[in-house]
Image (cartoon, rainbow, N blue to C red; front, side):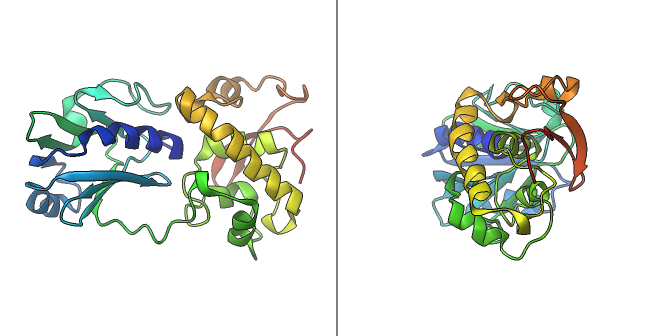
Length: 257
């Protein structure tokens, strides 16, 4: 985390800054864009926000865009309040020494990205063209097009942000579990019905998980991932494998190749 759901929660929080003018910028010196951000951002007004996959973008009044990518451990804090209290793989402590970006505004408020591991990345005019369609924009036809000619495991391809933008490890496992598709299945072997089931699972479950608070709120939640109880759907044994270099939780009984 953060995955696409967490990024949308952050985008909604960042929406509160629309109309505010940036008066001061503090950036971690280890960011390769630090000098550029300090030089360009002061005096600009945030006029909108949007999101593609895991990337939150602040639209600025001179046509610039500031991209915020949070890595696994970055949190967005607006007006002193964190949009998400605690991430699954990060501390819930708000330590000012972990601030990697701070924007001060003309009304005395501020926006911060707090990241203990320095994995968050900030860029002006981020390259969004390299990203695939967003998780909330998927259709069976679009997914089939993105997977055409690909033979890798479907789980690995869902995690490829150039194929679909926004899937992270937990929601990929959740969607495949809901769809009844094996994470090991080669994309080239999936039927039209299986692709439709993946899209339906995403369209049905991801908005509900978003409103519940994010990627950790599915059936295959952190407790299930840790303890591997019997499959909540069929009672079969859940398995913990590695697919595409990521820990994968799935049910061999109802998730077929």
